[in-house]
Length: 495
Image (cartoon, rainbow, N blue to C red; front, side, top):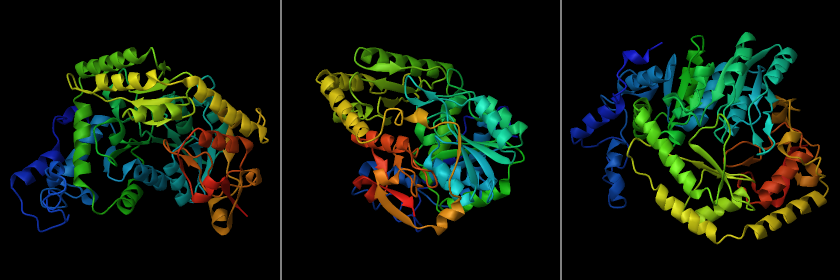
């Protein structure tokens, strides 16, 4: 393993190589077709200079799929900083990291324990691998109605029931920035010979240290995928994949990364990943104090209007806000009307993702706070609340009792799919009304987005709780990734 003390974290090898390339004032007779931004300059003058770094595998710029120069050095620095056996730049987002990580470990028929609160890319990987998933439902914070951590007892129970588990696939932190005792779960998995694979999309900045939570790797994960573009200053689709286990199937991983990622990787994305690692590795205690001070000043100014939810183990860069009487979706809409855009909303709250600021770095907190205050000063929450309650009551009157529709906490414990992936391939699909779908086997995902956690996955039995959650979310304005018939109140099921 490369040790961080042996490498100069002030270097940005790929960024430096691209700068040397630009200083040559190159003339492009190669792809991409915008020719160092010249062909786009009449349309977007301010972007043309940046596009000079949108290069290809030229001499001195290395090749992501056969890295041995600047890209390899940048990846070595990444591994040294995060303390991994090996780390990789990803240019197709954390989605490709989840796919490659899972496909490398899982073979057809392998049994895996899977966080049911996982991203849809994890489910896609399982289907491609033809694995045999057992879903583990997280505990529910009943006061806030959101997924929390996992019960150790549930994992002990799972390994007693299933003696052939190949891997545990977990999400850490949650999309709300909530963490849990991942080390305890990892210890149980390792005692039973299973890999621990973690979708750590929202935790790339945890390596900076306290008061941020510990990283998944530090808590025993064998592999972790991080979206550097979510919490660090990388471009969209820029992510990291870290492998901690020396016995990981690296050859298979190399194949899947090569097969699933573009053979023409984006140099601006890779350059931004090099920068994101440098940014985190050189983040000082003064920077942390400045970031947190700015956060406190922002939240304090708005505390008379917004209620901030705080939970132990929560990422300080995630602010969860509620406004009495408004659903989260309505609150998000009001804020967007003022030009303030939050990461996501649910029935109760919105999620602010705050910036990781270096000491003295400006951010328009004051402007945002003023806009929020002005937008909320004219809101009448009572009418919205009464309208929401009326819609929910109408859904309950249509045949779903409160006990049947208790929501997230109805779904718990360990569950398996009712059909194997191979069986699904052989069955026909039909669309039926919500009422007719009860008790049938779902054939397509139903996914509120963001965050991309499916309410229904193919192979699951449709229950009242599923239908109620779908209706409740749609009534409140949630966005869904789903096919057109879904928006006509129909679900896809197997015949």
